[in-house]
Amino acid sequence: MSITHRERTTIQRPPTVPLPVGIPRRRMRTVVTGGAGFVGSHLVDVLMARGDEVIVIDNFFTGRKENVAHHLDNPRFELIRHDVVQPILLEVDQIYHLACPASPVHYKYNPTNVIGTMNMLGLAKRIKARFLITSTSEVYGDPLEHPQKESYWGHVNPIGVRSCYDEGKRTAETLTMDYSRNEGVEVRIARIFNTYGPRMCLDDGRVVSNFVSQALRKQPMTVYGDGKQTRSFQYVSDLVDGLMALMEGEHIGPFNLGNPGEFTMLELAQVVKETIDPNATIEFKKNTADDPQKRKPDISKAKELLNWEPKIQLRDGLPRMALDFKNRILKQEDGDID
Ligand code: NAD
Ligand code: UDP
Image (tube, rainbow, N blue to C red; front, side, top):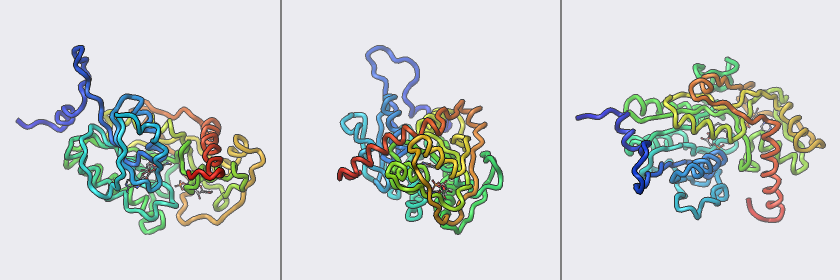
């Protein structure tokens, strides 16, 4: 007798009904690719707190062992140095696929999106795990629709300097849907908007980490172009809540996960000044090519179907990030490598 995809995947999951006393419930086994990175390590913290067995796969291209070092002695935790462009075989229930450099400074040199995603989808198919991909608001390119809804198909330059990331993620979404439709893999797609928080790389080139590092180091904040371009900034714990609601829910997506609060880069610099250093200054620099002029998520779909919305506003999130950055900058200055 053939069984449906839903039945097959249900069999793989730990039982949700109460078990007789004395019979241990099998823990959820979860893999997080890119789990030593900024977002991944915060997700790992919550999964570990939930009681999962967590495997992190990371090649440390932009991630750091320090981000997950506090779990290394826990028998439920495993860290594997591995590049997802190579196949890997593991037995897990859920795959959070984050591995991919996310800063424009780093992603220009890396083919992770397409090949890595194909490998992880192949794994999900083989072991019948649920698969979540962290796509990006960059799939909307320099948008002609504002704010952006999931139904918008985007406005992307296919041959520009950002296109390996934008088109890479668009291809990753396509692959994800193909594996869902053709191979019956249970998939989830998150489109993440600019996210910030503790553990971002100090010098990863993204605007919030740049401004915060620069303000703390008493250097001018580098505003690219005229600074009137906009972004919407989400605190990392809100994103982790959204990713888990998506993984545990019944909807494939794609879902925008972002904070609809929209700021120009000049306004962001002003908030950094008000919350971190009133003496912070700015300096204007030439902008990079194909920089999207505005970006703001419409999150009504996630609100309705995932019962999710962000809670932490920029003025509250920035000081939390600054505390972490301050400690790490001090360590760096003392000669401890970060
Ligand atoms: P990050 O650079 O801090 O984390 C990425 C992690 O993936 C790092 O630990 C890195 O070492 C690892 N990695 C990269 N290539 C790899 C490979 N080939 N094999 C194994 N590991 C690899 O970035 P992040 O901000 O934590 O982003 C996580 C995910 O969220 C990415 O998929 C990114 O595209 C997506 N995203 C993030 C943002 C954001 O604002 N942070 C916005 C949109 C989408
Ligand atoms: N930006 C800036 N100063 C910096 C770094 C970035 O003004 O030091 C601008 C950049 O031109 C863009 C915006 O900030 O308009 C967001 O850039 P980021 O790289 O953080 O994210 P993305 O462009 O991928 O949204």
